[in-house]
Length: 272
Image (cartoon, rainbow, N blue to C red):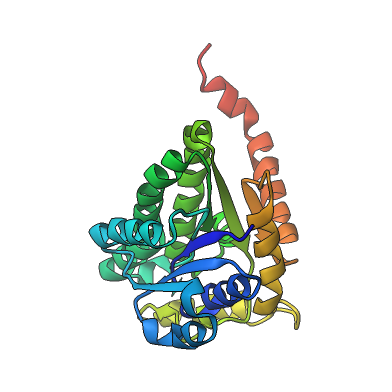
């Protein structure tokens, strides 16, 4: 049985790849984007199986209207993919108030509005799956991407708490946590803070020594996404790419070592 998918940020990068993969196998897609012109080729190819809606996820009222329109058009929504977002590159000291607020408006609040709009629809149906596109950097941070990391950490915390809230309604949640891929996320889609030369060497150290296979092939992600969407019992968390697992494992081992080293102090602070 074909599925009906609502996806944000569908006109480029992962969003367009996944939209096309879903359509290609016979699913129906409600594809949203701020720029629908980049989806015209899919409309020309797949016709009535794709329903496009112009949407800026920062507009909460528009988000609620878009979910209702999508549901009315196809009759139901099986899966919601919260994909809209972008990367903000820069150290904390380099980040302006506007940079920080804009990052959270899209990456966190936009995702929150879509999630809030989806829950009543999925609850009424008695089933549904919300896929939150997070990041491996939402689990372990990386210098000079601090506010981006923070926005994805917020997505992780929201989703982890939300999952048991809505399980009673038949709604499932998954945090999709990609490592770096060769999309335009670090290129045209990225926003750069105003650079401070004091951080130039750190940026070079962080980004200048990646191995040749560090960036995954975006096309390869479609296998994992389709398998996830079809899973009867999807995981709460799923890494995408082979770099994420060892990166996060190393980060957590370091955390546990530090927590263990300070455990005596922690216990003493309990007071009883």
